[in-house]
Length: 107
Image 1 (cartoon, one colour):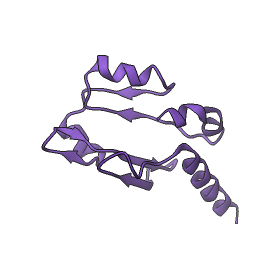
Image 2 (cartoon, one colour):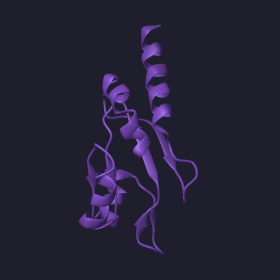
Image 3 (cartoon, one colour):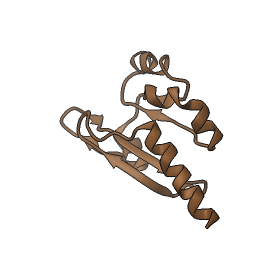
């Protein structure tokens, strides 16, 4: 998530807003939130994870990494699900994807 904080100016110039959510309690989520400059939700429940379309792991009662890219109309244009540290969406990939879609609009 720190990668998104590092590219915050570039993302902002594209109109990209970043949000994160965690099952962690507020004090633990705050440790992550203090490293970034975007909202980090905490205490996410199974019902909330289902509403977001996140992948809930029953055994540990957590959300596995679930990332969504929405367009201006709130339609999902990209998503990533993983069950560990691999396969996460990088901030630079979001910049490239948004630029790609913007270029497509101009054609």
